[in-house]
Image (tube, helix red, strand yellow):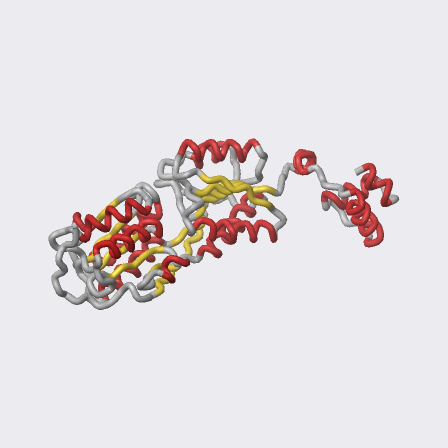
Amino acid sequence: MVNVAKLAGVSLATVSKVVNGTAPVGAARLKRVQEAMAVLDYQPDDVARSLRTGRTKVVGMVVPDITNPFFPLVVCAAEQAAYEAGYSIILCNSNEDSEREQHNLKTLLARRVDGVLLACTDVSTAYESLAKRHFPIVFVDRTPLGLPVPSVTIDNIDAAYQATRHLIDLGHERIAMLTGNTRVSTHIGRLDGFRKGMQEKALPIRGDYLYTSAIRTESGYQGARALLALPEPPTAIICSNNRLLLGLMRAIRDTRVMCPGELSVVGFDVNVWTENFSPSVTAIAHPTSELGRQAIAMLLKRIRGEGTDAAETVLLKGELQVRESTGPCSRVHTLARV
């Protein structure tokens, strides 16, 4: 900053005010400082500045699977909202591993981030450890089970209820659900919404129609093949994750089941897959952009010390988008496919 001050013909204190934004500077002096910084290609020392201000203007974000198309959409919206507020984001991928999640959090704390957005793993202990530090954290999409935590999530119960009622209204009674890890809050909510829709119409929830698996494409394929091979296969399947949906649609292709003639399908998350499958897939559209923006807004509020409620929550609604993969139940017994 000394060289900038000399070139601009101002005091070191004036340069500090411009760099750190700690006090207003007259237009003429501001212009001279900015021009001097440009000539010298001066870059402020963020580490030194953070030691003075107690803020790095950087937040961390940890997601469980960056290859899942849902999370990049949330990250992009969060990054834009952070940028508009003068913040940057460091992104980490836990790969659905709680130990790696802890490693990511330790790394972010070592980098002196001001707060963290976290889509947690199934056995996350992040909240307990960070709460002891009074460190700002907001959970996005996923939350740890049984704990009141600050969060921005989707109303998964309502979303799955919408999907179930849509199929029931089309005349389906033999409805199966292909779901992911039921220790993860999102899949628990979706299973609860499915149960709510079925019980409301006094329809049986058959144990052999509930297939729980890891959140992988191959797991979706194996689960779908198992459901389609039942002596009395379902006429409709709700798939609670887009990775599982990929496997389900491949199983439909391999077994040559007609969709929606013999089997109706509802998925979660609208993306390029759902719109370009043949048939295009009826799915719950999640407000991913709003999820990312609201999560950043809540986190910045907590960083400023304005959010103290441990159970502060924002619950966003999904929307059922009907496409070609759902149709009226034919009520003709479908032979099991192997």
